[in-house]
Image (cartoon, rainbow, N blue to C red; front, side, top):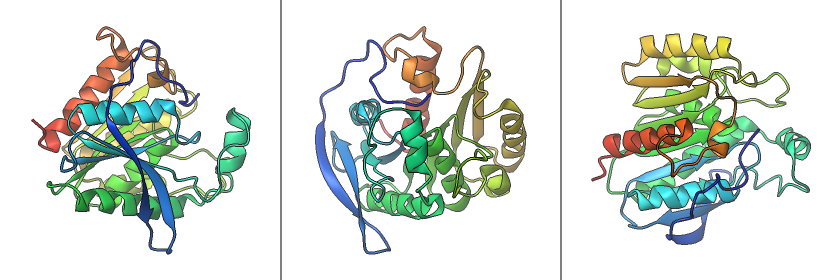
Length: 251
C-alpha cells in the first residue's frame, strides 16, 4: 500500500539531521526533519503518503542529501497527531480529519522555508500517493518548482473527506519541469484517470514527462531495491534524482 519501512537491501547513508519548525500563516508551526550535507544546497521537499513520516521517507531524505540537496520532510499530520496503531484503517481514519486544502497552504510555507535557505531560485518537490497528489497541485499553482510525483491521484479518491483540488482540473496551469510515475497495475489510482491527466499535461506543459511501468502497482518504490540498477523502481529513483539535479543545477 504505502511506505513505512526501508526498501529491501537499502543502507541508510550518513547525513546531518535536525528537527525544525516551519512557521505557518495560521500562527502555528509544522514540525519537519531537515537533512543536509550542505546548508546552502538546493532544497527538496518530501511529501509523504497518508502514513506520514516513516523510516522510508527519512531514508529518502538522507539519500537526497547525499545527492547534493537539502531535504525537508514535513509532517502534514501534526494537527491530528501520530497514528494510534499501524495499518491502513488507522491511517484512513486520521486522514479523514485532515483538511487537505490547509495542507497545501502548509506545504507552500515549507517550500518558502526551503527557498529562503537555498542559493537557487527554484525548489524541488517529490511526493508519493497522497503526497504525489499534493505535488501535482502545487506545480499547477506555484512558480519555481521542480516536481517529481509518484503515483499521485489526478482525481483524489471519493472516500477522502476534504480532498485537495483535483490535479486534472488544474492541469491547464501546469508549470515547471514535472516528472511523474505510475505502475500499470495501479488499481488504487486508476489508469483511466492517469491517461487523461498525462494527455492534458503533455499538451499544457512541454516540460512534463511521465512513465507508466509495466507490471507494477501502487506504492512500488516501497518494495524496490534502490541499490539494484536492474530493479525498475530503482531506475525511477535514479531518474528522479537526475531530474532534480538537472533542473536545480546540482553538480
